[in-house]
Image (tube, rainbow, N blue to C red):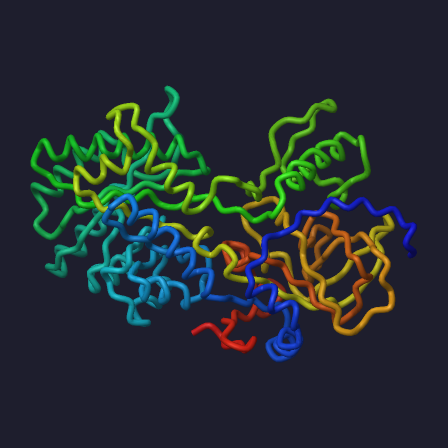
Length: 471
């Protein structure tokens, strides 16, 4: 290997919070922690989490809206985050028995919790009813189970109704969740008029994808339903718009556009591969024609987080000819939302130790890490941010090298990242690789203990680069 080696750099430079910059500038604590807890390590900071909550609160307060932000706990399992959300006057969205039980045991008030689990069994609904946690109802079978529990316990519970099947561009937005608007209208009247133990207070939806226009349409149609209900004497107190608010991972738009362009060229074999075995990351190639786009998160976004929320709220409704926030104000509706990824923006990094270096049969450098691919995996086909290489000792070999990061599962497809990475120095055994901005979905959503590997240790960064294990 030498400096003349063919290096095709296609950087995807991540945005880094100041706490991350400080951590990697003085990595001694990382090296110590890796040895203490064993690789990999998920390091979290509450500083950006609190900043992200404040940004959303500012937009909602500027719009003079009653509001409640429920952190979507499924995006990261650390209990520290829902506790911090509650301390900031907001709350947590829970999607399982353990998520809800841990939050209650941690002392989070039931009024600061909501239950949206896709599958709600008797054990989970019993817990919600016993603690008076608001339940978001998704289907009639769920309702029948809840009703039987309420009858047995002779207790009341607050429910919100999940909506689906919104009209957009002349078509119904496909979903497997919720009641149609007409079904919800009939169902809410039924429980309002006939069920003594149920207190209906709000509507809820969560859309797939990230379209501003679709969210505006869903809010308009939800407000139409709110008005229909009001006309028959039923008041709706809240509208929950779920999550899916975009965030921005990358510092440079041109890098993102260039990568996408070069990926397509590589798949068409117009240039050398930039992914392992020329993986198309979800693009379909038929007869040398490409169809679709990479099935990855849109890592660069001009419009994101609080500004995206502001854009939704200030959009003028084509139905009512008023901005969305005014429609909510006039009806005294509390706006609720359940961001996960965007509240965790810049809140965590994943760190692993280099275990080996070798070449595969195609001559590609492979750098093995003491972790497996599930410990940094989401529904995205690849995580498209440049990792940060931290040498354990001063390395005289300063020549750049391209290669792939591979993990510990005994599978041919065990790639931590499918993308080819350029390292400015040849990695050595014992060096650290830091993956930035992984707190949202990347750490925990698909993590597995296959091969009986230990799960990654989750630590919270305190002052002076001191770590404590998540409570």
